[in-house]
Image 1: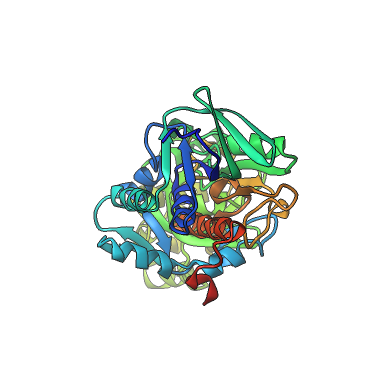
Image 2: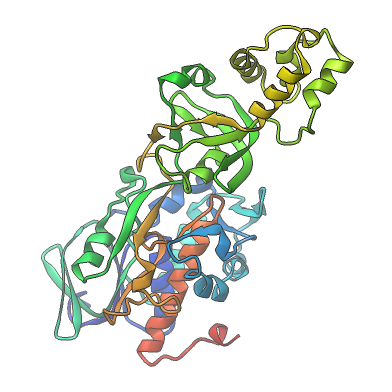
Length: 408
């Protein structure tokens, strides 16, 4: 049947995690759904995630692990579609998985399994998929949303924005969803790179010489802190700890790094008492990579034997090692950001249905909304949950009624 022959119940723009989840959920409820993506294949971001194994959710998912202008917005969707709900789907398809650390769940095999799962579910739900051409125009008239693609007018009673944000442009990521949102009068919280490496200025060149060195730290920005690995790069700072704090960081503000998060107060003085002839860099190297220990000792100006250094100076060194200041001059931007923070303002949307409160029939889900999760599967869980919520709402709006799961 010609895709443009008659109006669809819904057109979903974006065949990523959120878009496919929304499409298959609505399709399973009997709706005629058209799923469109400008790329040649669906799920491109899924395929590269988790080192190719897709960190598809996190067991510790909770609303307080998401950033948004409205910290309560994500509660409804996350509460109604949980990590266990997605695990049930994973296991029904026979996909083996494992927990890595901190509640992060990965496929034992390839991320391709997740894309194949979603595509199979879409196909079984009767979803029509169109790939390989961008949308040229969107309009609303006669009670329908009209999408012009490849010279063809496609119409539907509802339109779902699931095209993500501009993070990782090499995968085709753009700010298209924001343009459409503004076209319909919705406000957008300024998008910015999140889960992104920091860059350091010339004054930190000594640390840039440590490119490739990693160690566990606790990083602080104001009252926010994360304890995970940090990685020095030729441009600055990366690794899970730095990616996490980058989502909170504001330009022209410092971050602080605790290089000895397990050390008790007075630990350097105690080392001095036990080993007065020991070198500071060797003491540091007992818990840190040797190259990093040397740089820290040099920066501290403590390159002699412990016995020759006063207790006062050692305590001052302990304090600096516990809150070592770094002043990033920026980040590596959307090109290296794992996700986009900001996006379509949550005050414009219903937290239960994901529909625009002032534009009936227009929905926004996933990364294009101002909801950004921590590193470690949280953003995928938001994609599944928001996509499921919108898919259910679409069905209810067309008289299908709530599914049994929404009644629990």
